[in-house]
Each structure stands twice: as structure tokens, then as C-alpha cells.
Length: 108
Image (cartoon, rainbow, N blue to C red):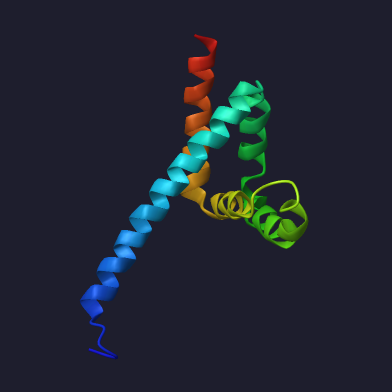
């Protein structure tokens, strides 16, 4: 125990934070997919995501770098979530799957 904090309490809160973050990320991915499909841009988005996957980390760093300017037009937390999504390969897979699902729903 260091400074009144046990290792178990740190691990538990870290797991709780990770679950909360993944839930937030999942909601963000769903909202991005919904907006893209609403504008009927799901096919170009899927092609772009598939072909530029190796450059996703570089794109995320560009978003972080442009965050001060982008925050004039978009909420700062949304910009951060978008950059985190680009950095996370699982989130990109989830976005592609969600785009396909949403596209099927919009067609029906």
C-alpha cells in the first residue's frame, strides 16, 4: 500500500475506466456510422477505411495536431474521440461493421 492506495483498488478502477471508455467509444462509432449512412457516404467511407488502414495512425496524429483549429468547428471531445478511434484498430473494425449494418438498415 502506497499513499493509502492499494494495488487492487488501482486495478479495479483501471478496468472500470477501460469498460467505460470502450462503451463511450462504441457509442461514438455508432453515431459516426449513423451520420455517414444518413448522407449516403457509406461506400466511399468503407473504401477509404479499408485502403488507408496502414495510414490510420498517421491520420490520428494529424487530427491531434489540427485539434486547436478543428475545435472552432467541432466539439473538442468529439475530435479527441475521433483521433482515438483512428488509433485503435478494433474501433476501426467496429466502425466498418457498423457502417455495413447501418447501410443495410437504410436500404430497407
